[in-house]
Length: 160
Image (cartoon, rainbow, N blue to C red; front, side, top):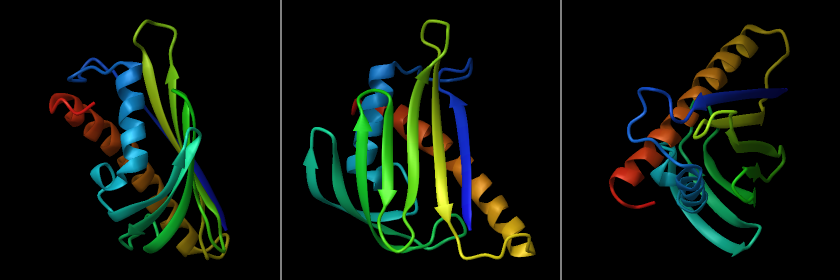
């Protein structure tokens, strides 16, 4: 069964400290593509296999959990400069995670959206389906918030 969800956060909400520019967020997303273990706590290790101007190929070791199945996963990562990063997990059941950086109408108004298309072996309409949905919802929101927090910390540390 395919589970699809998207979660969006305001990057520079009134309580955001430090504020981030579009270039800083993009830099953070590029660093996340290359070293996801610094941004995603359930990733143990990442090995970059190849990279070009359009993206990269990597092997990622993911801890098993309620949000993501664990194990070694090959991912094709592609990007559209300063707009979107797509992560396609290869294998029997390809899954896609997309990170989108968007702008609002006001100067400096930025949003970060993570969308997920995740395949799970559950019976539609079952109690297990409801539990999987809840885990995916919680994990998706936590993931986008955690990535943004890590990007802010990279700015504080002078690493963007």
